Length: 376
Image (cartoon, rainbow, N blue to C red; front, side, top):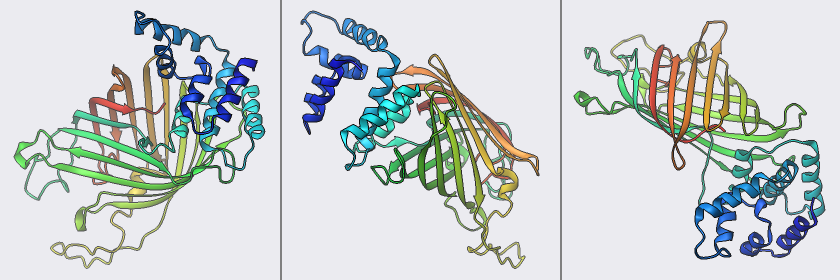
């Protein structure tokens, strides 16, 4: 580690709450490209172009040895999450050990941890996207439509997903960089092009969860290994005949670096009481009891997800399976730069359980749209 960097670190430590002094005292490569350019604007000749400043910052950041990047990323993460009782020496020792190991800290993980205490930022849990046009080859008419309304549900519809997470703890609990989080995912299917039935939201699924997340100290690969233990509820928020829901305890094991990631999430469904149905088809079933006792036959017992980034293109995949029943689903996605932070997105789904109302109905869907947050 260079003497110039150590002096900058000491200046930042001594500056306490003066964030602007920390930024000015740090070398340009320790900043993001935007921060580097902003700093240079204050010092550059008035006639110099922004294109030149951006090129200079990219070159300077790219020329830094990888070990320095790892050390700096670790310090930024520990600055956001380390316990107040830790000393500067302990934090430096932790980051020096990571840098010496050659392990990289994925950019997504570092940035997410840094932003946890920012009251103006909500981090993503899963992908966030809107697909203005999708085509479903086999839309289910029942229970989505009233009896006698044949082919009322159209093949074309919009699909969107919003997935967020927020920390419930802000410093280390049991180990370095662990924490408890609340997550919420909403997925909707909108019959936007169906004027015959006033273009309703055909189905919306709500998926709140609470989970504990901690790093796994494995020597495999150059990235980060992560472990989760969580409790999740998923429901479509409807009643009686159209109600679908289940509760799960799950664990997740995942690997992440800046180029690819993979995770395996098995679960155990929490049992519910059977419905006490009187058998009368004209009488709605009681509210209490299991609305979908066979859902695991179609949704399976685990979910395997993965992503790979090739230049600016990201490929993603999801697989669910119940080997005893031979059912499940898979989903494939491709995202690419579009404009600013927006990315174009193609998605293909085949199988069971794309939505809760259709958990026991197999369909194929292809869609195109815009993605706000990706897996990597």
